[in-house]
Each structure stands twice: as structure tokens, then as C-alpha cells.
Image 1 (cartoon, rainbow, N blue to C red):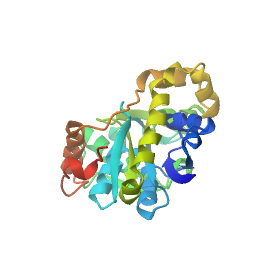
Image 2: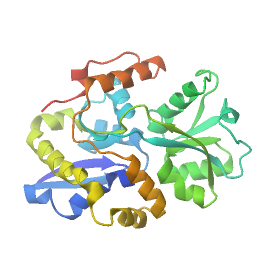
Image 3: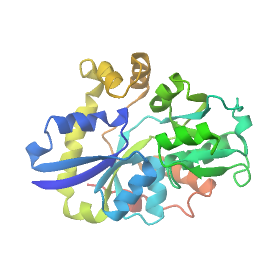
Length: 284
């Protein structure tokens, strides 16, 4: 049985992977798919793809595009979540900062450079007409746990992370959410290391077929809202809101969408140049 390693964030977006693994659907096709949780998010997964720690990743669109342009030998094979990611902008509950304008020139906690929390800080800054050179400052905190510690101790001033994942921390009175910043594009794609893909294309196609069968029907799974609520420590009404906002995809990201992402990253000086569509995606 062929072992294939895949990584993703341990969040509700990826429950479909857990369900298909639990059901033994990959093993039934001769694939020993091993899931690795990446608490450090996209930056950590990019490193995992580069180092060969994982063969595939369910990863933020903007983060993998930047890293492929920076030399990550991987390709996007499919969009996973079509809807935007809604980033909550959080401060410590006791923070003196009350509005987005108060955060101008303060320090953002990020999981690592090149991560979603890093890149989206630029999007947020531009949305609010900040000076990208003067008004952005960063403190690397590795993960959500590090952000709780960093904001509470005043090492950093604000932290951007998916708003439903951080909602329990807000409810517990540790964080306070002062605003939101949605991604202007589909949020998650599936990327595969190129050398692995070259030799294992049929297995990757099989994996995609299995996960796509589940995501097509995900919202219709009986009591899926209760399952998510229990598994991810979320209030049921929050899960129901998230489900109403989230749409999965079973298609390859199109050229126009990649153009939108790259134009924004180029405008913000996050990438040095745009890449051709064929250099970013793999078409089966």
C-alpha cells in the first residue's frame, strides 16, 4: 500500500478529510493517506512541501502562490474551498485598542513570514489606506497558542486568524475581535509537490475524487453542524453561520482568479513578479 503524506490546519474546513480517512476510503483504493496537522498554518506547510515532509497540502491560496513564485517546487491541483476566508482582527481583551485605526503602526502577531496571517496583514493595511512600509510591524508567534500568549503579554498588539476558529477564545474573554477582513478570492487550494506528482499522478487523482465526493454532499451529512460543534468546541449557531457562508469546490482554480491574486500580491510588493498560469497549476 502506497503511503502519501498530506497536511492541513486542524480546523473545521478540513473535517471532510477526517471523515474520509475514518471511513477507510483511501485504503480501499490502496492508498495509505497520512494526515498531519499544521498548527503553524500555511508557512509551516510550505516548508513541509519544500522539505518533503508532506507530499500534498490543503493550503491558503495566496500563501502557496507566493511560495511557488519564491521557489517552492509544488503545483496547485484544485481549489478546495471556493468561498473567502473571513479573517478576524483580534486584540487582547484588556487592550487599549478599540478600532482598526488604533492599530495603525502597531505590531501584528504572525505565525511566520509568508503565512496567511502575514500576507493578510498587508491586505488589511491596504484596505485601510495605511503606509505599507511605515505602518506594518510583525512579531512571529508560531501558532494560535503563541498568539494568545503574545497578545496577553503585550509582545504583539493584534492578530489575524479565521474568525470562527478564534471565536471560542473571544467568547472566553481572552481575545476581543474589532473587525473582519475577508480574502478577495477562494481561500483554500490543494497543492502537491511536483516531483511526487510526476510519479504519482493517478493516486493524486484518486485522492481528489474521494474528497470531492464528500465535499459535494458535506452540508447534507446528517447532524454535521452538531458534529462540528462538538469536535471543534464551537457554538452550534456559529457552526451554522459558518456552514451557510462556506462553499467547497471540486474544480481547478481558473486563470482569471489566479490573476486577481497575483495582481494584488504584486501591488503589495509581496511577490517580485507574476508567474504564468501553467507554472502555478497542474492540469490532469
